[in-house]
Image (cartoon, rainbow, N blue to C red; front, side, top):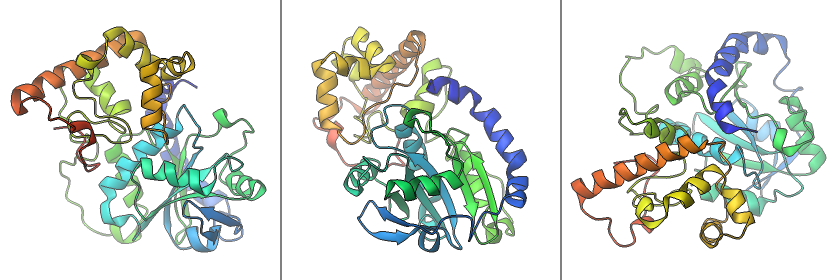
Length: 326
């Protein structure tokens, strides 16, 4: 699977989902009696009835992941972590997030716990595994048909069980639009008057410029990395162009798994330091990797000029997910 190709068509997919969402709600018997009420196990080891305790009467955002994925799952989860941040205290109160394992044989509650902690998820976000036959029966009802892990569906499912409104969407859609779509599932929110205004939900606190690497960083890097704010899911990237050779950075951005496979010591050290989520192969071409490196270099110079040298231990300082870049 090529992530860049997926990003390129995300807008088209989103438009198609928006058109079909109403008919999806009307033509399919989603809800009690359709969604299985089978036992599932959360990342905290708690056994719940899937429909009664996680879906019934709720507004939900459902994603489908497996913890050993080195492709799309980490970035999907990172994008949804941004959504969680922007929704704020609505998550766990009015809106609930679910990540369903598609690999229940290997995704134990402990592995899901480590995975969720890597993304600093809150109490309104539940990661679910269980008996293989039960998890597959649930996922089947949400449209998962593939028997090959790397080919599982990458859409997210949005639903309001109380009203019977269900639709598919993309985690790679514009965050502003995605958040408005999620909020619009709430009848009370729809009936309120909303004044249009500038929102940071779509820009992740990143002021745009003419640099080609900046837009790419925002889309595929900012969900997991900061520049000068501290470690997130992965390391803070401030000063990385001074610490690493350009050829190594380009190779790692294009295919980190290849460097791990040949036992590159730096790649292995990163995997050891961030064991829960390894950087996936993003399908980045060499020219795009060069643009990203140039942008990281420019940002490091800008921060040094405005804030001074990076403090010792900068990469381990605590941070909030809202603070992507400064």
